[in-house]
Image 1 (cartoon, rainbow, N blue to C red):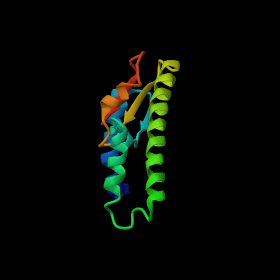
Image 2: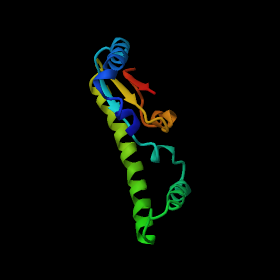
Image 3: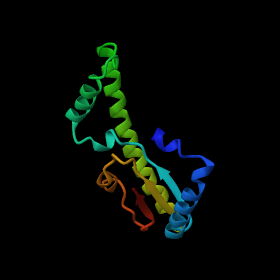
Image 4: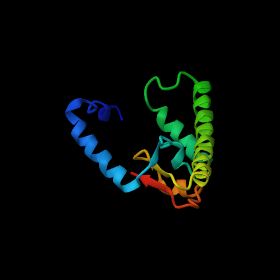
Length: 130
């Protein structure tokens, strides 16, 4: 989040360098995939989309009218489709690159079990970094 970005200063380089060394040692050569599908990754059914928009509409000036609410609803549904395609893409590219590790850094609010629905991890080279 934005708070973490305030720590991206030279004063904190030793911390990040140390963390990076640990990650490199654990995964060797890897591709880091950063995911931010925290809203649509948690959706179980159609009513969940409506609940998200309903909760968002509680913020003053969030939606000027019903049309904006409907656009947000549509965007959430499209984001979920994108999540499914993205997860399948990660699975496919990992199959084509069996000697390379793929590390998925999930958003803290994402459900890791949702990724399992779309990733076979056939080569055992996909890892989740929380």
